[in-house]
Length: 356
Image (tube, rainbow, N blue to C red; front, side, top):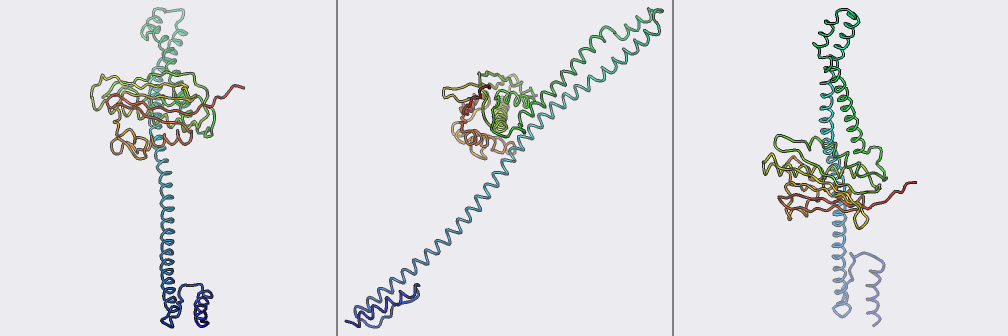
């Protein structure tokens, strides 16, 4: 009996002093102790296989984790690049509109400057002649006045100067709208007038609202409610407004390409209000081509677009959705009927700023 316990003790000693699974219990006899040693060795072998498998799983998991981290970083980098690309796309559209407006106004000013120069020169000639001939030879002076249509000249020079002044004021308004739209000096969360942002965006999109060879002018109907100043990231909200209004124009142009009727009525309506939840609500509706029900649930997905290849990145509405829901804890909803039009509803919490 003592030899049995001694042999069992030797097994325990072997695995107690060597904490690894490479050792095996010696099988010296064919009795119960020998069978116990066999079973013990089999258990050790299973433990070894389990440990090896666990280590393999652990290595695989670590490799997968590293791969996922690398993929996540790549996605974040790509996302940042795409967001920047979308910003540059919006900026390009913006600059094109501003350049178009400014170019028209500069041509307008230069077109009026030459007549103004001629009129002034004629006035100088008249003054010089008047000084030379008065009080003699008045018929000659009158003939000169008639030749240059002096009365019309005096009237028209006033109108020309008024036109130049109006052009300069429009340039000033466009530059101001550009500043209001970009809000480069107002990146922080602060109180702003959303109506001002809408008006600035519309002015910058004016060139796209005008009539073209294939469609009539897009009429904009505005119904503004009594909104308080709203605390938000003004530049981001203006970017959303630009995306929503640009999409509305795109939808109308697509509808005109489908219908091909130049006298078709083109309309965008903008309605603002404070809803029952005390949130600011902006509704932008168009009578464009509309969106089918199966596509409606995907319009806020990144990269999704119904536009032709090269005409859009599929990120405008996705970024707008993130700005509204993520950065402002609001809602961006879509209601559309194919062939009739689309309405996008922007809702953000209102934080009333009281006058001090």
